[in-house]
Amino acid sequence: MSLWRKIVIFLSVMGPGIITANIDNDASGITTYSVAGARFGYTLLWTLIPTTIALVVIQEMVARMGTITGKGLSDLIRENYGVRSTFYMMVAFFIANFGTTVAEFAGWAASMEILGLSKYLMVPLGALFIWILVVKGSYRFVERILLFACLLYFGYVLSGFMVKPEWTEVFYGTFVPQIKWNSEYIILCIAIIGTTITPWMQFYLQSSIAEKGIKKEEYKASRLDVFIGCSITDIIAFFIIITCATTLFPNSIRIHDASEAALALKPFAGNYASLIFAVSLANAALLGAIIVPLATSYYICEAMGWERGVNKTFKEAPQFMWIYTFMIVISALLILIPGAPLVFLMVLSSVLNGILLPFVLIYVLSLVNNKKIMGDYVNPKSYNYISWGTVGVLTVLTIFFVITTLVPLRA
Image (tube, rainbow, N blue to C red; front, side, top):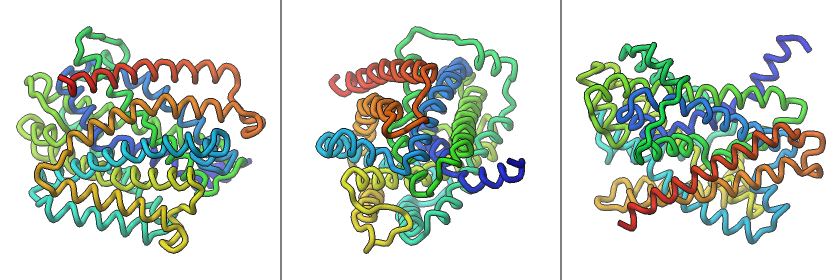
């Protein structure tokens, strides 16, 4: 096969892997990386290397199932493990992803206020924009918009260079683990992994591959799409940590979310770096607000055997469109209500996602090793060792994450 033909095939399948991985750098993810840099400088950069490896391993398996079976992950779980267990898992996912969607709109509102715009105007406008985009647009059109928006993430790379870090220290922190045995450091290590590998990603990636109609013959190109996406997402994370580590850490500036980081950058990095950081946060929050409800609609409809897809109309796929609409409208309204339980919803979302992640990964590994489903594309033994090791580490870290999140709630 000629090089040009390979490039054409890649461009035709490009999208699901890059979009899924990049949009995982949503408002909560950016907050985690910002806090990590501000609190511990460059010392947490090393965690991005094993996290990237784990992300690539898991996303590749999910993409492979999507290309070989032509089905979404919920479809396969329902067909192989029954409707009842799938239904209960979907209810938990719906609650978790609803909280995540609220967090995305909170990030959008905060970034708009940094830019001098009222959230009472911009939250409804943002919600209306993303609703029209998905409900009225085709899959191809939506995918192109999302791919273009992914380019805006490179604003974080630009801000990382603008703050002029000490590159020797950066590379040392990246390749030499500097473990600090205190609770905040350990929790942030767990949070970096937890915010990078989420349950909804696995469902959205496989569903989007199935809807796009990527075939078995295009599997290698689809795998490259996943590798590129996973690499880019953690490069962005790398520069977010660098930006805050270079400017905020030396001045002992403590922050609690990404919008505070954008404001805190002004006196140390200048208005432009702060503005780029805020605009990139707005972009990430809005993209997250598109994809998380979309992923939810996909996997609930797959689990229940309902029609689904961005290419469908309200009449053709009413449940799909109504689930998406409900999540967008109610999440946006909650942001506008004074005293709404936003923190509770976000914490509940994190806990549920943490609890559900090991189960999802076990389902994925069970399905990808089923010869009746995957044929010759099951995992080789060596790949299974890496995969189960990744699942084991993620499961242990997830248990710690859930415990450390619930303990403060009881206090």
